[in-house]
Length: 554
Image 1: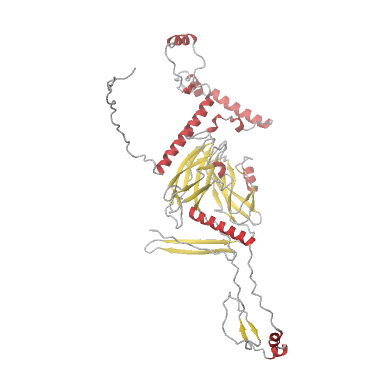
Image 2: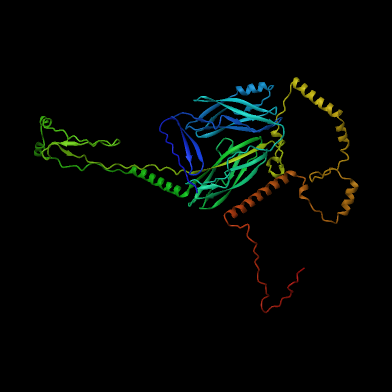
């Protein structure tokens, strides 16, 4: 069994409120909840930090191309927020490590949109196998300066272990008005080499009794739309039906550690149709009020005769003399009600001091503009680490690398001239290395044993030149034998890569269609194969068959 608890916080006064709650379960455990809420004034920025100390992922010392890591800053206000990362502490860390840049911020100045997250990129390049700690100040325009502490550890070996969190990947309990549910709320791609793409599938299920429409939003941050794509982007689900969703990591040229949030907006189609009907009715009412009008004046009375006017006339002194006050009553009106105004008429036809109620006019009803229905949001967490392809420790053949046919010269760093001091350092280091290799006896023995080692067989290695006599003998022997062409030994490797990419896309779409049909129960993968037995063919009556049942034409 389950029970939903709803906490409501009303933003009446600006400030910060805290409420400790102790939740006790009968014959069970006790839970302590600390409820916090903030109400902001108009045009007031509010940066929200998840934690003021952040631990970066461990990086191998001497890494040529370390990954980019991000620190998230959330803007909880209704106005844009500008920030600046003060790099004084980072410069001091560089000076303390012999002018080697240990930690750098790639984007120290930025702007965060309302109710959005900004990911501040950092690059951690350790020199030693130890833990680094640095205090960094972040100045927010229109607010105070905050101090965060970043921790980073340098390791010696190449490890594929990743940080494990206690966040469950599946939703345990459904919310009261939840329209859909994901099969997995967190997708981990583990380690991916650069220039490679990877895909994983999840399922989206409609848990309501109405048709719903879903739409994926991958532009939650500046980098999420460039690294992750979801297909299909939009669609409709019938009650209690499911659909297959493909989550794909796009090829990225730079190493990075990603922890992204992708949002799926679920809308009830019945509420959406009611909203469109109300909008059409509201627009019709506006158009009707623009071209039509209503006369609200009272009916005009016939003019009174001079005698009637003289009878109803009284002098001002008489009115002031005999004017009586209304009776005093101890009836207090409601706080939000206004006292009823009354008029006293002193005329010949009415008694002196008689109350005349004011004629109440019919209130003018104005159509209220309808508000769109609020969608239900599902969050999908996408994690993974994109590593340099030269430092990748896994099996590269399991990934699709569409950038192999592209000239890699554009990703090579530009060559620059070195000064005399750098030239002397490189010359001295290389000279010592080569001298040590020439004096090493093990190197001499390894070079002599290279001729005795068997040549490994690879399909990609082909002899450049073939003996002429052997080639002529082979030609005479195989002149009468049909030659089979090996498609893997094509002289155009780029064509093979393009064909392999097309075949991979076809297989991907085919498997996706099979899984989609299986999800929609159009195809049963576990069903036994059925054999349809056709009746034996008999020759027409009156004609003789010239062939026996087992005869064949040649």
